[in-house]
Image 1: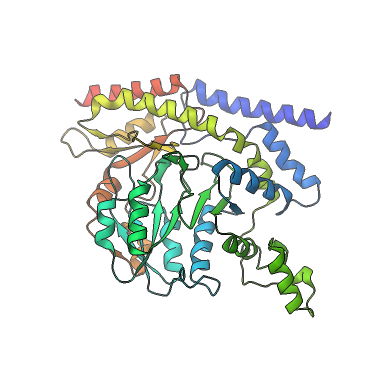
Image 2: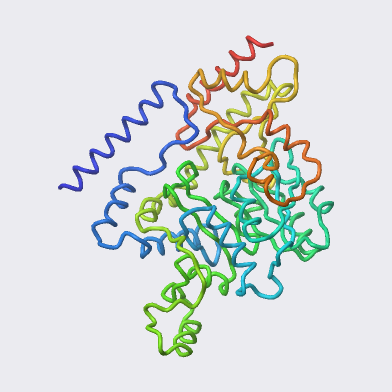
Length: 423
């Protein structure tokens, strides 16, 4: 009875929040993905006496493995931690000879990205090579990848941006041609597909974020995907201080135990590690959201279609996102870049949207080469013409699973008013 009462109160508060958004045309960048059942499941882990990493984490990993058709999903405390641990592993003593990255090795990555795509490359004594991106899709310019390859190039840190998927067939051919490792930052594009294969399942490793504003949310949380069982076992241990108890391979476990009989196996640390563990609280919150992911994406796709259709008459002034053949976009946000013109600039447009309660923000971190942190470290880049334009004139508005047709109609009406006044 008490649980039902608490559940009712939570549902009542969530409904009130949703009504405020709908009634006031207050359109945020993201909305809460979890419902009252998810919150109760999260709170229940506190009463079980073990809310840290445990069975709920394992349940999330199993669901993600099944959904995305990957052999291993390793949950961590964030997508940024996932990126860091991938590069730490590849530069460590545990990396296989043909995968080993050495100090100074170059890693190609797009210039329009998030800080924790590039930072782990630098933090592990590697050199990021920034490549320009395409307008409209914001993915890496494949024509420029080969031009950026040198004798030091060892890997591509790919980013599937804002729900979009890169053109994987050509990228995989480049990796095979030059013997490059492929790592996918899929933090923004869970559920997206290229030719019916999920983004994040092409490379040796990929990362996923389950941050508060993403498709599904554990508030803070991330995943590493890999089909490599050898690395998956090490990653499970490394996320949890290097603990033996996280090693699932029985043959490996027995080997460590037999070689270290003087150490209590309950407190044996066969690998160097970190505390990047997720909690069962976070896992319980997101667990049932995984089942809803496809429906969430379907709503996002309809909203994106309505916005593209309604805004295409302004193609002279706006670079709009687009649907690409062979790609199922999971639509993290709705990005727009203002073309150079003598009628208005980006700031005028986003100020108008803000006044009309349509939240907006820059596209990812813009041109990462212009961010102050990077200027303190060694990196390489070619001409970043599109990335600079995106930094200056790009923005996105929210695109989530509660953006209904009446909301997109309101957004279109605001754009129509702006353009009526300007042109």
